[in-house]
Image (cartoon, rainbow, N blue to C red; front, side, top):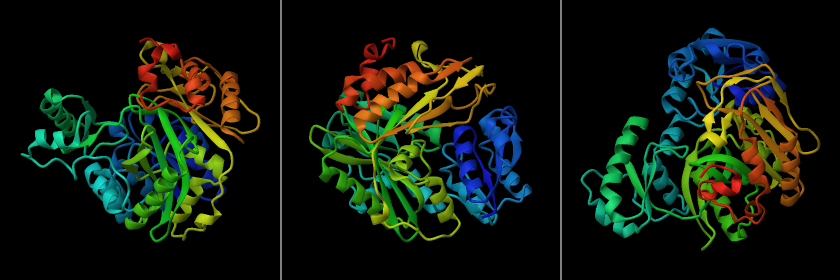
Length: 451
C-alpha cells in the first residue's frame, strides 16, 4: 500500500492521515466543496473535491469517490466510519477496480448489514441473543402470536438498519400491528427494505461491546467497552473496559465474539454489540459493525495499540502480528463526544466559524478533532466537533481527570455539548455504574436539560 484515498471527513479523516503518514503511505482525502479547505484537506498530501455540499452528491457518490481514487493513482481506499464504510456495493466496486478495500470482505458487510441474518449468524456461532424472531418476520405471518410468544415489552427493528436507527418500542398488544406497519414503512424509506424482526425489550439495559481484529483466518479480541450513555440511541460517551461486569459475563462476551468472527472468516476491525441486563446478568447480541468505530480510541488507550495501523496492515495482506496473549489491558479510559449542538435548545445543531479553540493537556489526555481555530462547522454533516479521550490508572481517577480536562476546554463561535458532558462526568450514577442507555432521557432535570 503506497497511496491511500480516505473517503471521509473531519476527525476520522485526520486520524487516518496521521497513522498512514507514520507508515510512509501518501494520503488523498476526498472533500465536498465546503470542505475543500478543511483541516483534513490541509493535512493530507492531496485533496480531491468530489462534489457539492449534499453528502448524496459528494461523500456518498460511489462513482465520484472511486474516480477520485483512480485519478489520483491510489492503490487503497479507507472509508472511515459512516458514509460508505458499511456499503458492500461500494466495497465490491473498489475491489473490482483493483484497489485495496480497508475493511472486511463485501460478503461480511452484507451478512452483518442485514440485522436479521446477523442475529441468526450470531445464534449459529453460539453468541447469546435475546428471545425474538429467527430472522425477519415472514410476509403474512401471524405477528400477534409471534409477539405473544416473545412477550411484552418488545421492539421491532429494521433488518437493514443500524446505528440505533429503525427501532420502535411496543409496550402492549394494542400497539403491535400499527407500530409494525409504521416501522416497515420507515425501514423501506430509510434503508430500501421493509423487512423487520421482533426482539424482547430490556429495560434499563447497558450497552456493551467487544472489539475484534482478524486477518481472514485468525481472530482475536481487544477487550470490551461500555457505551451506555446515549441520547436517542446515539452514543454520547464511552469507556473501556466495561465496568462492573461479572467475569463470567465478560468471558462469555469476549469468547463468543471471537467465535463469531472466526465463523465468518472475518478480516479487519469489527465490533460486536450487546445489551447487558444487570438485574439478571444476561448479555445478548444486538448487531455487528463491520468498520472502525467512533469510540476506538478508548481501546487504544488501555491496550497501547494503534487500531488504524493494525487495520491498514491487515488490509495490505499481512497476517495478524498479535496473538491473544500479546494483548495486555492497563488502566481505564473515557471518551466524550463533543458536538456542535445546543443541549438547552433540543440539541439543535450550532454551525458557524470557530473563533477560538483551546484543548486540555496533561498526562492521559488525548483530543481527536477535525477542527482548529478559524475552521467552519458546516450545517450539512454530523455535528461531531471532537472527541476528548481521558486515561488513568483506575476508573475513579479517570472520572476525576475527565472533569478537569472538560473544564479546560474553550470553544468560542459555536455552542457545544460540553456542559452536558460535564454534568454527566459528575453524576453519582456514573461513578456507581447505575446509569443505563435511557439515563439521559429519563433524568433530564439531573443534567440541567429541559424536560
